[in-house]
Image (cartoon, rainbow, N blue to C red; front, top):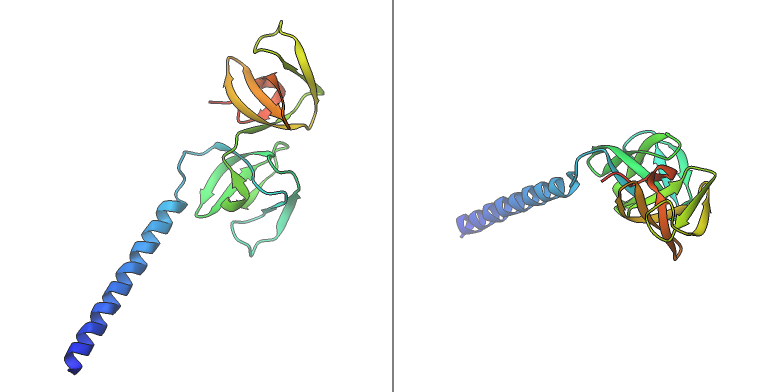
Length: 165
């Protein structure tokens, strides 16, 4: 009887070790970047800390309080992403703080949001420097830009964010 119990225990131990190995392999697959760097992301939280290194053990060098702020991911290390903000500052953020939502920030004094993607079209709204909006359909030097429901087309050169396809 002792042999059966030992055999059952060894089988359980081996199955447990196999399950741990499978979970570790699955976690590595989830941590692997789905796309090559650099790529665009945006802040998914109302508050996000940029750290000097890829761990909670590192101090924060910036605290962002701007959901949807665009960032460029320049390096991936496990669940951590080294990002660059619109002003060029770089640091590390945990992947849970980031979103794949395409956004941009206005980099000129005033960016007109046009009725259509061409210079001669009527300006519907004007966005000042620092305004953040969501992007879609960037092509031909123009992007569809949505700022809290106010939609129009903005010149890609007037914003910093997910404008390159």
